[in-house]
Image (cartoon, rainbow, N blue to C red; front, side):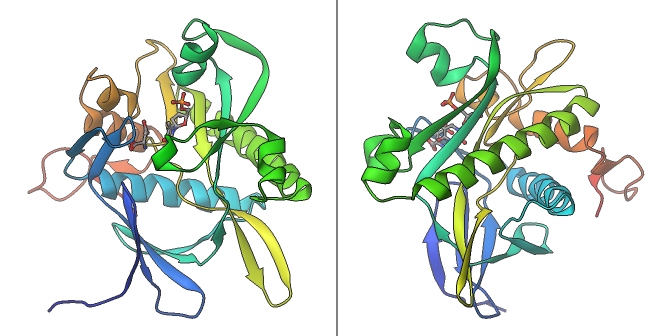
Length: 255
Ligand code: TMP
Ligand code: ASP
């Protein structure tokens, strides 16, 4: 049977549909992988399912320590029911080590440690290639006010503290990651909550022993099997089991 539902937004790695309840949406994780503002594109069979599971797990853990997210519950292996929020068009990047655009922009060496955690802001705009911006750009151009920036920064640092520990237990360095936030309206109040996703698509995760990338950099720079890395991350977080059905080769996702 064809399920018909209204598409609200078609992103590079996710599609949003109208949700079944008021002020909800369905967030569907696609198998599409893109890099360099979609110059590079591929379909990686099974990536969406892995990202959904990893994201579900992380958002549930964050909720458990009192960090509010847009996540309500998973609906199936690829889809989550989420609160409809007003997305703030700012990508908040948190860095514990130098890598990626920071290395290029400031001539650092990949893997350099930073004296403190660095928070950067980028304007979420594909046409402009997501340019780096300052806090003043955000307030002057009206994307968020000072209090909201302070909330986003504080939440980003709490997420970093928590995720560093979570990944350290899995023998993984959390090098950097990107977050998006939204305004959640409830009656007359508004709260800044974590939105979008947290998965190996928007984190840099390095194996602690080998410094091997276990994230989308494998796809960006053709340095290895992306799906294998994502499975490894899910496995180390305890989200896979070896004792799956006999007719499926290899580990399967556990719910
Ligand atoms: P960057 O070093 O390329 O600025 O990326 C920093 C982090 O943000 C890295 O973990 C990858 C993630 N990221 C996204 O999630 N989406 C993007 O569009 C970009 C450029 C980076
Ligand atoms: N997500 C961005 C793109 O699609 C860039 C990246 O993650 O590298 O192109």
